[in-house]
Picture 1 (cartoon, helix red, strand yellow):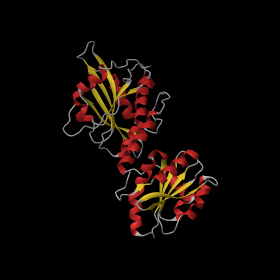
Picture 2 (cartoon, helix red, strand yellow; picture 1 turned 120 degrees about the vertical axis):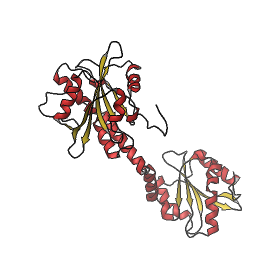
Picture 3 (cartoon, one colour; picture 1 turned 90 degrees about the vertical axis):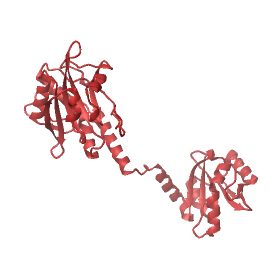
Length: 353
C-alpha cells in the first residue's frame, strides 16, 4: 500500500517486522523514510519493562528529524504501539511527508498488530510518564455534550427509581412521607382515597413542589378517558390517578390507573425529580388504600408516557385488555410485582397514534 506521496513499505521493513513479531525479542523498531520507502533504521532488544525501556527511547531519536517507532507491549506481546515522532523543529517538508505516510505504515504491516498509537513532537512526549498519562486519557470518560449529559442524568435517576423498595404503609394521621423524602398533604391523601371509593370516572392530578418536596393537589375532575389529554399537563411532569368506570364492557368494572407523565420538553431537573419519585408515589398510593381497609388497589401495571396527548380511551383499552392485565380488586394486591410500560417515544411532527 502506498501513501498519496507514493511512499511504500519496503520489503526489508516487512521482513524485519515479521521476524520481530515471531521472535518476540525486539522492543523497538525505528522506521525512517528514505528514497520514497519506509525502511528499518535500527532495532533494540528489551532491557527491562516497557516503562523502563521507554525512558531510554529518546536516545534513539534525533532532535530535529522525524521518525516512526514500533514498540512491542508487555501485557500483550503480540500487540504493538505505533509512535509517530515529528518534532516541531523539523523541516516543513519532512513534517508533511511523515504526516501523510503514517497510515500507510500500520496498514501495510497489518493494522491488527497495532492496538495503540502515540503522537509526539518532543522526546519528553514518549517517556514512561508521558505514556502512562496517555493511557489514563484513553481510559477517561469521553466528553459529552450538554444534551448527552442531560439524558444520562435522567437515565441515572430512572435507574435509581427502579431500585426503590416499598416497606408497607401504616395508618397515617396527617401525611405520608415517601422513602425518597416526598411528603403527602392531607388533600392529596384524601383525594386518592375518595377517588377509589367513588363510582364514576374521575381524575386526580398531583405535582411536586420542589422547595418543600411535597406532593400537591392540582385538580380533581370527573372526566372520561378521552378527556385525559386535555387535563394532564402537556409541558410539565405530573402524577395522575385515574378511576375509569367501564360500563361498556361485560361485566362492567372500575379500573384504578396510575399515570406518570413526563413530557420531553419539560426541564431536565424536574424530569429527574419525578422519575426518582415515580415508583415510590405509586407504592404509597396503594399503601393508603390498603390501610383504609377493603378499598381496591391500583392496577399493577402503570402508564408512563412522554406524550400525554396520546392518552385516550383507545389507548387505555389496548393497554389494559390486549395484555389481559385488569384492575386488581383486592387491597392485598402484590404491589411489588408492578410491570412498567416502556416510556413512550416522543412523536415526530404530524405523527398521530
